[in-house]
Length: 419
Image (tube, helix red, strand yellow):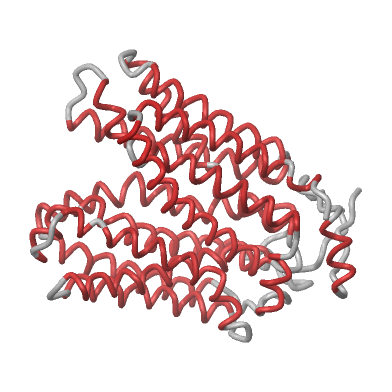
């Protein structure tokens, strides 16, 4: 059995960086104690995290389904209204790593409740925004709430459940993403048509308040992790293993968004595909993602390295089939489902990897993973757009699949890197 040594000083940190193992941790393995001794597993707290994620991701995705009415209501172009999504992502690059050090003494239950209430404030500001500038400011607040929540998620979950069940705990947390994708966003579009887009954001604000209350009730007090300050953040950034892993994460997520951002263009070659058919195809993608997340929870605890290779490989193959055989309708639909399945498992695998690599600096690692993802979203979409304009949508899709596979391979080999 492998033992992960505790970090005592700078020399010990370098030694650990040269021997990090991302294989699953057996129940009897010696690991750094994160969950307080004697505390029973708090699965209710894990569910509370999932509810928080559901409310936050629903708010994050809503502009995509309400873009036209928002643009009309605020008298801006749809392209300008779309920058609300960009603002949310870009602020996360800074806020994700910064939240832990800024509040390094604050009880994590209090911090998560505060972030949920910040999201509620953001949604109220959006719902009452008299001009686009106010909406943009509100979305920046939401970006802080989302990135801060994600940066805390794995470290908090690690204090709620045994180490050997961390992958399953993160699977439950990430189920909130799947539910938001499959249910909340289409429902938001439907309710927006009935009640107006401002009413939908009020409804999501209420959901954020509910999430805050549930977290206050179900989460126990969660002390800040030992490595939650600025020193821990820079210590993680000095780790060769972490640097290589973050690059792999950025390639994996960036490759996905190179293609997924333009999936509608890619679907334009599918014979007879109507707007309703496109909606069903995207719903199939979401259902695939839901299934992939469930599988990833088990894989992360038992075969983490295998999952880090297989899921990106399936993603690359699915994107390639979708890009090159769009006229084969059954194959195209199957490819979309597999695409969703593969990427649906990525967040759970990546977060578990970060916890295994940096058991003493989980909050710092979580923040850096958030930053890598948000940067990948922005750069992946931009790179895909350049390829779409310069070469074509099929080429952009295939390139995205290849980049994602390379990212998965790099991430899975991070443990073998040496300082």
